[in-house]
Image (cartoon, rainbow, N blue to C red; front, side, top):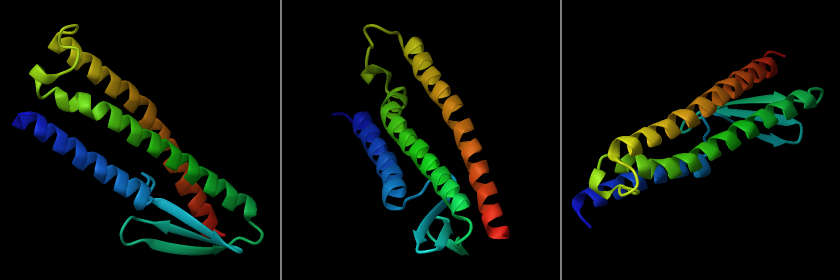
Length: 149
C-alpha cells in the first residue's frame, strides 16, 4: 500500500468513526433534539455535549408528546440513513484524489467517473437536505408549542 491509499483509508476511518460515535453513542441528529419520557413528564434535551433540558408535564397533552416523539424518530431515521449513504459514497469521493487507484478505470475515464460520483452526491443531497429542513422545522414548532402551554 502506498501513502495515498493509507491516507485515504485513515481519512475514511476518522470521518466514519466520528459520524458513528456522534450518531449512535451521542444520540445526535441534525435537529439537535432528543427526549426521554418517564411517567407523565417529557424531558426535551437540546445539544450534544452540554445539553439544555426542559421538563414538561404532559398529563393532558399526550397527543402532542407522541407527535413530537414521532418527529424525532423520523429525523433519527433519516440521519442514520444519511450516515449509511455517506459511508457508501465517501470512498468514491476520496478516490477522486487518487485517479490511478480509482475503481472502474478500465470502463470509465476519470471525467466520467468524477461526473457520476458528483451526480450521485448531488442527487442524494437534493433528497436529504429538504427532508431534514422540513423535519427540523416541524420539531422546532412542536417544541415551541409544548413549552408555551
